[in-house]
Length: 411
Image 1 (cartoon, rainbow, N blue to C red):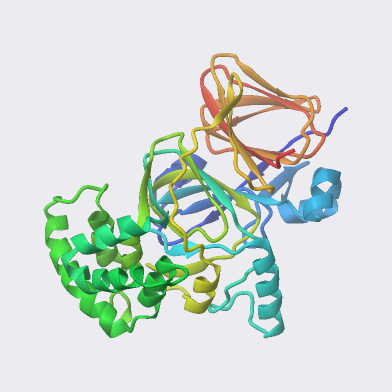
Image 2 (cartoon, helix red, strand yellow; image 1 turned 135 degrees about the vertical axis):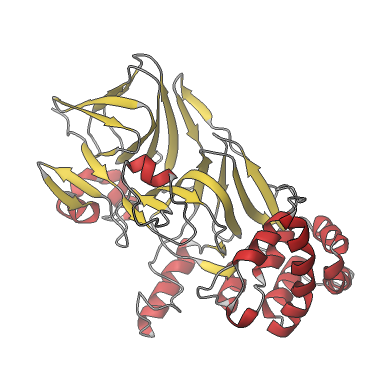
C-alpha cells in the first residue's frame, strides 16, 4: 500500500499589515482581540512550521520531516537537501507591504555565511539574511489584487516624473542622466533616491503629501493612479520624527499592476516589488530573506539593496495558468523549487493522484472535499489542508464545487 497523506494546520503570522477577517473566517477561528491576521504558512520553515497531525499527535512539519526524510523523496533530497524546498502561504494584504527584493541562491549563501561569521544574531533587526536560500515567488490572486512589480521603462519613468509637479527636480536629474553615457540610467536614479538626504526627501514629499491628502479625502483618486497609493503611504507610513518615507518614490517608478481573481504573477530574484492590497495564494522557495527599500520601519540596508536589485525595465507578465487536465490549471514558472496548481472540482468530480512524485501540500479554499488515502477517509473544508509525502496516493471528491490549491516540486 502506498504512503498515506496527513492533515496539517498552518502557522498564522500576525503582521501589522494583515486584515482582521479573511484569515480568521478561513480558519474558522474567533478574532476576539481584533488582531491582524496577515499570513498562513503551510511549510516547514523554522520561523513558522505547519503542524502535522500524525496518529493523534501534532508535530511541527520540519521536525516530522527530519524523522521521515523518505517523505521528501530521492529526487528532492538530491537537489535540495533534507528540507522541503518550498513555502506555501495564504496572504491577506490590508495595508501595503514594504518595497522589497530577494537575493539569488548564490548571494544568499554568501550573505548568510558572512553575517554568521560577523556574529549577527538571526533575530537581530539589522540582519539581512535569515537563511541561505533564494526566494523566487509566484502568487495567484484570490480577490482583486494590487501590487508594484519591477521598474517602468526609462521613457515611462521620465514621463511620470515630469507630470508630478513636486518631482520637478527629480525629472531634471533623470533627464540629465539620460543624456549621459552611463551603464544603467535607472540604477543612477534609484541610487540617488535611496541615498538622498532625509531633509531633501522631506522637502520633495511634504508638498506632495499635502496636495494628495485633500484629493484622497474627497475620494477623487482612482486606484489605477499611483497618487492613490502614495496618498495611502503618506497616511500610514510616516517615519519617526514626522519624516517622510522615501519608498513613496518607488510607487511612481515601479509598474502598478492590477490582477483579477485567478490571475498570477512571478517575481524572480532581484525584481523589486510590493504588495498593496488584496488576498492571494503565494508559493515561494523556502526562505525568509528580504531586502527592503522603504514603506517600512524595518531595517533598510541601502548598499545591500542596490547590490542585488535588477535595474532593468520590466513588462509585467500576467500568468493565467495552463490547463494540465480538464480540472487542473498549472501556473508555470522557471523556479526549480516549486510548482503551483489550482484544482477545480464540481458535483461529484474526483481528482486522483496515483503516486505523488514529489512532496505535495494541498489546501481547500472553497467548498469541501472527501480525501481517501491509505485505506482511510477524512473530510476537509475551506481553510483546511493536508501534506502528501512522495510516493503517497490519494483521491479527492466533492459533492458540490471545491477549489483546491496544490504546491509541489516540478518534475
